[in-house]
Image 1: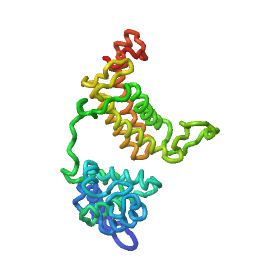
Image 2 (image 1 turned 90 degrees about the vertical axis):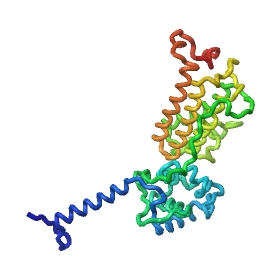
Image 3 (image 1 turned 180 degrees about the horizontal axis):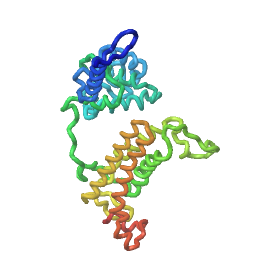
Image 4 (image 1 turned 30 degrees about the vertical axis):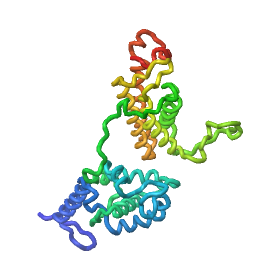
Length: 325
């Protein structure tokens, strides 16, 4: 027995229908297969569209040649070294969520894909027959050829930290840099960095330096998260500066394997938060802040709030016990 379906006066047999469905499924599977940017992942026509968008929205910062200007280069060795270790979805998400700098989040997914296509063309990567998709799941399957990424660097040791003598003790570094930056990140758990900021009534009448509205008319809430995350990642190694002392005068245990491990955990947490911040999504940053919280807790538990000290009913605020296990 043979089934048939009527459509627009024409007969589509059951067998043909099944074949059509199977064909579309094959295309969907292919879209999910891993590819590299060298395998023609965009079309020439798409790159032309991307060039138009780029010239209107991006060239003022990154130059018409994509060589960089106010912003970093979007082609060349430095660009590939930075992005070559990530799937194409990371680059697309960065553009869509944070660019253009003065109008972040205004590019559509299709416009972003077109811009990336133009960037690939400028990088002398050949086009293909299928347009670059704006779908994140598809972009995650597109990577750069092996060998583009910079080789992994070995973990730092205390001896590799800058030879500049410390200007302050460990508590001053923490309270001046690490605590404020961490608190900015933790605030994102309950306050959306993208929401409009409200200046408290009368704040403009406060004399002297105003901590409440500082730079509120210059930087966005998301930029503050970016800066705090970078501050954590970059300043964590200051905990390994030779010659630094704790507030109680004891030397910071910079050669202790645990201390080095916890310092590196803090630096990696800062990097993770920065990466999460590029999504411009509050929940994503809130999740990443858990890694930061764990990094802080792991160090505090050993060098400040050790369980044995708690059992001895020692006061965690006792500065005399700091920097010791």
